[in-house]
Structure formats: C-alpha cells, structure tokens
Image (cartoon, rainbow, N blue to C red; front, side, top):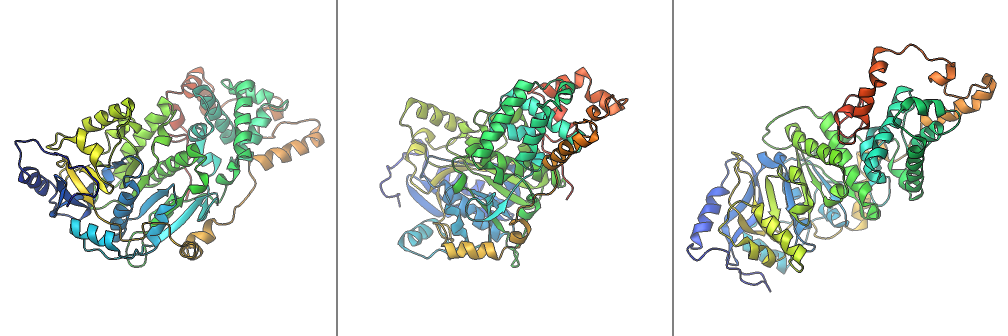
Length: 527
C-alpha cells in the first residue's frame, strides 16, 4: 500500500512490468550467509514483503553511507541496523547527536503504526531492549566521561579542532616533537600551553630557534587558540584516564554485541571537536587491532553521524589521512558507516570505498539542491527506477538501497520500505539511562579524572628550581641547560637535517609524521 500522502512514482520504464524489477531484486538480495534485513522491496508505491532487501553480514566491514534530508528516517535506519548487528553478536558504536538513540536501552511498545509497518514489510515485530553503554565527552551530558590525552590525539587532529592553517599545523607538529624528545608528557591542554609558553619565553628562546620551522609569532597564534579553546570548556575532553577503544568491542552475557552510545547533545556547539574525536577513535582502533582480512562478520560497526562536519574546511593532507584510514581499517574487521545528508558531503576518495548505500529522500527546492540530486543519482548503478523523481518522492521510512553481494558485486537498486525498530523510537527514560551508567564496568575505570605529573608540572618544577642552580633557567634535560651542545646522535642528525625539516613542514606530506607518529600524528600507546 502506498505511503500516506506520497505521490505515486512511475518508478519503472513503460517497457518493464512490475515483475521485472521484483525478479531482479529477489535474485540480487538472496544470500547464503547471515544478513541484516532492511525491509521490503517497493514497486509503484506497493511493498512486497515476499521480496526482502538485505545486506550480508560479511560485507559490512566494507563500509557504507546512510544519507537523506532531515526528517526522512536516517536515525531509525541506524537503529534498525544496530539492533540486528547486536542481535548477531556484533558490537556497535553510535554517535548520538540528538539523544534519540538512547531509546535502544528500552523495549518499544506496539501501536497501530508499528503493526501496520511490520505487516507491510513482513516483519515479525517484538519489542526488545538492548545492552547499551552510555558515554559522554569529558562528562558533559549523560554517560561515563571519556577523554584522550593530547599526545594521543596528536597535532593533525588537534589542528583541525583549533582551526589552524597548514603552516600552523606543521608548527604544532614541531612542538609535539620537542615535547617527545625531552620527555615532557602532553596529557591535557595545560601541558601543551606550558610547553609553548616555555618555548616563547626568554628561557626557551634557544630551543625555539633550534626547532627551525617554528616562529615565535606562529607559536603565539597557536597559544592564543589554545587559550580560547580552553575558555570554552574544552579542557574536560583531554586528560587521563584515556579511553581504551578496545572497550567498544565487547559482548553481553547473552552473546549479543554491546551497543556503545556516545551522547553528544551537550557538545552540539563544538562540531569540529566531536567529529574529530570520532576520527581519533577510528585511528586508534586501526593502530591497535590486528589484521584479520575477510571475516564472517565484522568485529565492530562504527556509525559516524553528521559526517560532513569532519570534512568541512579540511586540508588535503587531512583528507588523505582519512581516506587511508578508512581504506585500511576494513582489513582490521571494522565497518564504518558515514551518516550525512547527501553523498556530496563526503569526498570522492572516501565515497568510492562506501559500497553499501542507503539513500533516504532528498529535497530539490533550490538549484543547488537539484545539482546535489543529480550528483546522487550518478553514484548509483543503472536502475529500472526513475531515481531523479523517486528520490524526491520517497516517504518517511523509505530508502533507495544498493549493497555489496557476498561476491562483492553491487546488488540491484531497490526502493525499500524499512523495518520498524523494536527498541524505543525516542530517548529512554532518565532512570533507565542512569541505571545503565551506574551498572557499567566502565564507570569505575573512567569516571574520575587523573592529573599525574606531566609537562606542566615538570616545567614548573624546573623553573622554580632554576634560581638555586646559579641562574640556569632551562629544563635540565635540554641543551640550553648545559651551556653547550652535545654531539648529536645519528637520529638527531637526521631529525635536524634540512631535508627532514622540509618534509615535516610540508602540510601535504604525511610520511614525515609517520616516522614517529601515526597518519594523523596520533601517538601509539602501550595498553
């Protein structure tokens, strides 16, 4: 039956009958192994519950895209996928921008709309609650607070958060190199500020000069951005205990995968921060996980909501690092689904790796909207549907889908009426969320912030001790403290060579930073 209020879309050409596309969809979505069900195929507004649209579990680590205009059902699609992944033993990570996804912790109650949708798509619906872990960035909002150290976050991701240009980003990398070299741990923002303040002071001016590519004016700009960032309350996001991304990959006692929900409503005004924090999580997972190749089911599926925020104003080097991380993390058994409004929000290099596509309705109110619509249509395989018209006429809870088959080939494009979520399609009651947080094993591990000795304390102690040491004011472990330059080691000769500095300063080159840090400048950590 057609969706209420929807226009009947002539979705197939006059030379085709309804059975033509239905037969192709039935054949294309018949898989031997376990799969997730999206819903039922639709032709000319009528759903066909005997023709299910599905995606093989084994291809979900080949990444995907969930797109569509606001209010078209993207969040419910995430919920339907997360429920079934959890039910098949796959841990799930969800970035919950609006707070709606907390409803997964509560079973939904049946009503006329749910019964009608379930009948329409052939779903055996049963209200179900899932094991959900609630996290929050630095404790802002509901959830166990999670943090990252500044060292682990690295200069590339931090530059994106601070809005630094390529020259400033390269200079920040030199500050990190200095802190690494002289044993000054960067755990929170005050550590990084202390190092920069030292380098721009009379005591540290020789060290600043030795770094070569870092000018005092650029260091001052970075310092001002850090102070402004801290004044906005960002200090709480950085520090210890640092979140171990291995905690995302757990199963409940009944064998279902744990759903980790990062609550983000309290940081909606800091979009660059939370989107970059999500990228840090992906980069950290990539570094820690072993290669597994093709797997029967993914080890984790990661839903990256509001993905356009990550790519906005990103440098070419940053985009290259994202593309490489997304490409390589597949072999670690992790699937990534980017969630945004249109495919054009995602760079082509990343979009080319997203073989599983769920496209909800698009709006074409302006010339720019019309261009985005045509660009979206061009990214789909050839179809019997008139996608230019269909994508503007889809009802809420409907989508155009194509995925990868078990052989890795694209399936036929299928207009799909989506299943109804079995958990609550609204935020869970506060008492349910509080109980889940209190009972979580992660609360004891991460709830209380730590502040051990790091760069700030070390520099303060050395500066206070300096007057007692006959006027020596520089850190004791730096060359300035001894009054003479030690004979450089082979490694130091390489580091201070003009060729190495040139590579390090280049914003378009990631290789230089990979020598001591990762693709994003994030440091590897011992678990």
